[in-house]
Length: 335
Image 1 (cartoon, rainbow, N blue to C red):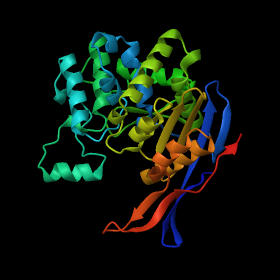
Image 2 (cartoon, rainbow, N blue to C red; image 1 turned 135 degrees about the vertical axis):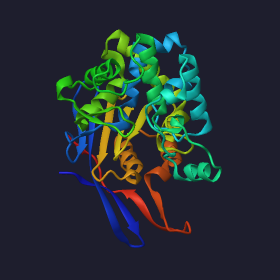
Image 3 (cartoon, one colour; image 1 turned 180 degrees about the vertical axis):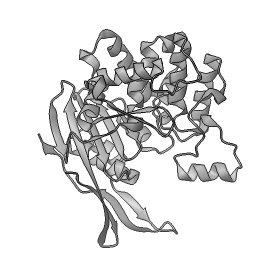
């Protein structure tokens, strides 16, 4: 059963709890630590993006189009639609000779509510490039152009690019391709369901690719490097994913997924972490992830200090006065 991972206080009372599950897995497949159900079945959602982006390298598209770290990183992103994100996606499309209308991700407002309000006040006309998944979609289009696949239906589960990315997920997460549950994501492409254990294993192997095939090892190292060289592309200004990678300086890769999913791969330590907030509450993600990182002694004292506002978040009222906290309420159990 899921356990309480995060508490939300208002004054002296715990007003709300967020239950969830956590798995910590080594790159060789050993379950090391857990909370709740380490084999909880759920969709990986956008946490799969860094693994899907491997196909951009494996296909040869990254070399053919000379994609920069900014461009590869935004392919792994759930970005805020800031100017530098838009520039990176538009640069990818120019290299491919495509138009933004060929992105089939739909048009959405920014994941950052303050920035979304700013764009609305400016009267900004949103396009699919602003969609938080436009980078991933541009990466899929890059593979299609590289391999001569159809561009009109690249979001279909039976399209070659989606089949290839599903096979990559299978390889990286060491799960039989037929055991992956396929649904449809908010941005219209297939989304992959599997146990948290396998998600954590996939991220452990992404960050520690020594035992992968030579081609996969090279691709994993390139994606890991791109995300760490351009962390601001992965989320945006003050975003947790971006700040976690920026502050830890090449120690890890981290990626959130919708409905309360978070995955981390830690380089050198040979581990991956995957967690799921049961009710999908995104406000609980960073406190839960920070607790796992601290329990595993991954962060230095300086890193913990710089990231402390992501571990214990302020609960504010309508006039921005602090009335409580959003804070972790668990510790990992050794397997």
